[in-house]
Structures are given as C-alpha cells and as structure tokens.
Length: 154
Image (cartoon, rainbow, N blue to C red; front, side, top):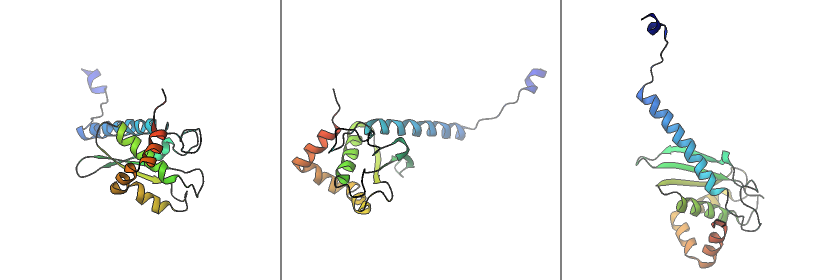
C-alpha cells in the first residue's frame, strides 16, 4: 500500500490530451505540406524550389482552424531575387500542387516572405484570389507551365 502512495501521478486532463493530439496533427500536417511543395520545379531553372531555398520547412505554418473547422495552412516562399518575374507563377504552382495532393479540405494562404519581393502585396493578392486562380488555370499556356513545374518525376 505504501508503494501506491509514494507514486507521484500527474493527472492528465482530456483537454491537455486533445491539445497534444492537435499539436502532433499540426506538426504532421506541416511536414506533409512541405513534402509536397519541396519537389516543385522552378519555372526557369533545372532545380526544385527546395534546392533553391524558395521553400523551406520553417515557411509552413498551421494557423488553427476556420469557424467551419477547416485547418488553415500558411505557406511562405522566398523568390530568388526581389524582382522575380515568375513569383506569381511559383505561388500558383504551390497552391495547385497542394490543392491536388491533399485529399481533405484545408484553407491555403500562400504568401511571399515579407520584404522579399518588390511587388509582394500585389502578388499575394493574386495567388490568394480564387477567381484569379481559376482564370489563370483556364489559360492553356499558363496551365501547361504549372503542370510542368508540379509533375512528379517517375
């Protein structure tokens, strides 16, 4: 009986268990998202976005959920130069790759790293606007470029 009273137990509340599960799920989701975007090809170079440090693990954030309980995933990317003319295309590739690759509903916020591009605000608006994304993907040339960048190597 004495052995039982000497044991120190720390009670674990159901809410702390849920919080641990959510943290674990968020961490898992972060790495899943990163695994999908790291292999995207740069539109101009024969390298991936990961190899060029355009995308990086620290640039993927799980930001909680919407009122409808949809997880919000923020992806920050860093174009190679402040006047990168293909930054919008890169953002579009990231969005399309994630929307096609992840089988459950998530809200994606894709952003250029603060201070990394001369027109980041304008580009951020474009790559987070559903109508502009849909219109871009109706353009055959643009669609072909996106498909080329996001296709998986055999």
